[in-house]
Image (cartoon, rainbow, N blue to C red; front, side):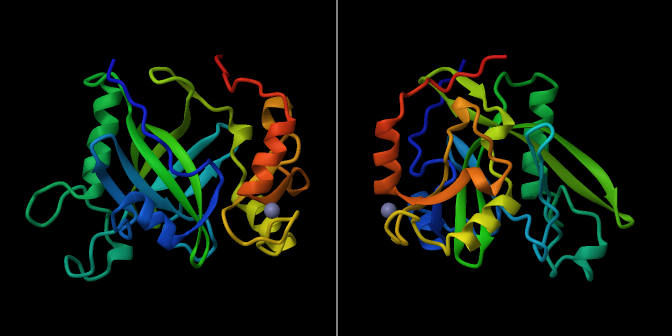
Length: 244
Ligand SMILES: [Zn+2]
């Protein structure tokens, strides 16, 4: 098995600016779907906000991220929103949709042993992003939506426990966007301990490893890095191994 252990630059659920995102990846990831931006992984930018350009969604029941493919460019077709999302460009090369679709199919057909790895960042509001960690691309489908065909990519979160071993995270680990927006508004985008607006992330009051839930704003608050570390010191660390 191919080893895979990138050093994460952010903690899962850390809140960052777009500039920090670009600096960490050393790449312009603006187009949203970025296939193999790095030899080890790809990057998806996502948003489930009401006015988001694509219908990304968290399936909380199964803990799956369902990411929508992207439209044809407006210089290829007249109405991108009324045209099937393309797998190939007018020149016949694969689009980002096509590259990810091929990667998902290769894994499903067992042509490769490991699923394709995708790092995900979620837009919370303009200029504010949240690092979601690494996901396995486990499936892809072409579905009909508003009389046209769109692509759907199915991603399952992974956590790297050791250099070679990876396990899927239980879905309670993921904080739903509705909860994040509620927490962000309630805590006014600041650390609840010191009011800092730097190095923030969403923190579980009762850690998920001890049965805490991410599904309600009551158990989630904003902490800066310093206060998050202070808090972690007090807790007895339980290894995050969830083998089913
Ligand atoms: Zn603080």
